[in-house]
Length: 508
Image 1: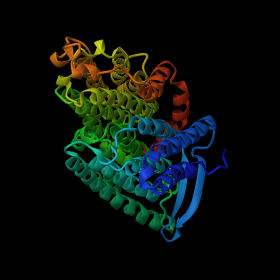
Image 2 (image 1 turned 90 degrees about the vertical axis):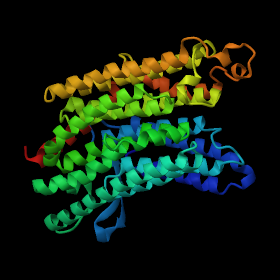
Image 3 (image 1 turned 120 degrees about the vertical axis):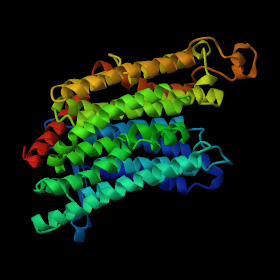
Image 4 (image 1 turned 45 degrees about the vertical axis):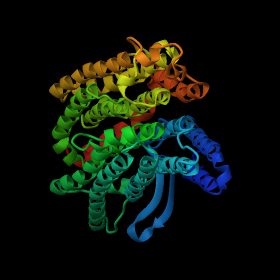
């Protein structure tokens, strides 16, 4: 398996699916759905093969590939994954087929292009896999930027009434961050040219550079701001609630569950090893922003009247926990941060999907349009409860281990910040339980209280397709809540190596 060009195949399979969809005649555009699902399942199978072929005692980057790309610029199309990237690739592999199945009826024939919707989802999958598998900084940057395009069109073409505003806001925020990162990428190339005799974008070659502290700070900021916008951290967060609220449910799952993880992944992958001294210098400020985000996101979530916006604000709080783990500079906190990226993708994916189930029954995302729904759909209520408990990191669910690792890993060096961050757990319980109580319990709203009302007859419990959509996420939430060790074993060596690079490059 080690000699198979695994990541090239994983990136190419969705694009092959796009080509097949493009060849469909207009009268057969419904075939785009099974083609997209088939391509996503092939990618999922590839990630499973990667997982079972992974060697925890193997080299840092496994399944390496390298192809000539732009030799004049010292850039090659190099792919590979350490444990941090591997778990993110696996997360994408899990989420996309679920999203395809969940979005089966999102593109209405005659109103929207079914072919374009599912083709865009596959293009987005390909680019997300590329950004996590890239081991050349220029290749990473290219994937980082181009994945904005399919997401922009998915929101602007298939979203809610304010979709154009939300899509443009998302695109402009991300584009500004990308331009800042490009300036730092060019700066790294110029420094490598001076120190190595030839410019390069190879991540491993760039680790050997000796960059003076002042220059490090400027280069660090170019990368960090781009990643902070993508994550997002406050004060760069305002695009996320709008984009999540206007995007179709499946697209929101990919946006918050996978694409946004590129931000926190980039902080750990590039900011720490390449700019160690600057990372130490800015860490207190970043930890302050992280803790502020935990409290700010949780407090604003409680005041939301729209379920999709509420879930988006909870994610801002969760990204604060992840950033706290990254910049605590301990193995426990770093491992917890990466594990949290995975677990947040699963829990927020489940939450968005359940919200989608509710919206499809009431044609509304307003919390006030629900109440007492557990009487009419007890199975959906049960699934909603599990997803909500995962979001508040209840012991026995997947998020508990990651949040606990971050808190104990950060406490030694940042006691005050960790104590304040712990308060965020209380707010998390508040907004999750409040949302569940408002929608699932209490008296039925008047129009549903009448037994034979059309509104009540339209409300049904979970369908077989919805069972197929939500079951994998619920299963993983419970499995990783009981036994997260296999994922931790993959993450640990990569985090240790990253922290070793940090101390070497920082000179501390």
